[in-house]
Image (cartoon, rainbow, N blue to C red; front, side, top):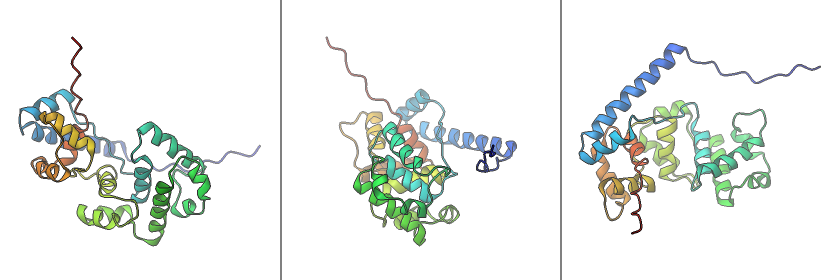
Length: 235
């Protein structure tokens, strides 16, 4: 019987290092929550109602993978995105995530069958080509770049907008001062928080967000969790 071989597992960080990182994040989130709660009574009530921030980043991913995943989930409910991405990954058994060359060498018809629109697939394949061409920075390169510099560099890619790069900054590069003002959930959350007739425009939301510095990422996390106003019961 041929022995089964398995892919080597990445080394785990020392327990003390992991515990310290978690404690540092919790302390930062607590400072951010206090900063937001001090803005006004609306923020104070919302932060108290939601409780401690549980923002979860995914720093193990490189920018190429993060961008492909962001495009896959774009304008979809999480469950639909999970299904489509799962079918894509199933095309590459034995790989945690397909390398750019592997993705480009795959028949596009097989990838379309996963559930991607023609436009999304063109964007994803364009991201893979850009990674091979060196237009997408490595994780270490991206970590050394300023937020706006990275946004300006990546929005030149077909189908990649500011929101997509902001998700990369928030979840992969763990930047704590990013406010995705184009995000409907952020603007609608603020409308509900302040009981406005309509949500602020992206430009207005960016101006409002200056008060959230240097914790705009955490402000977005809380705004995404602003509940809808319950409908009044019928008489």
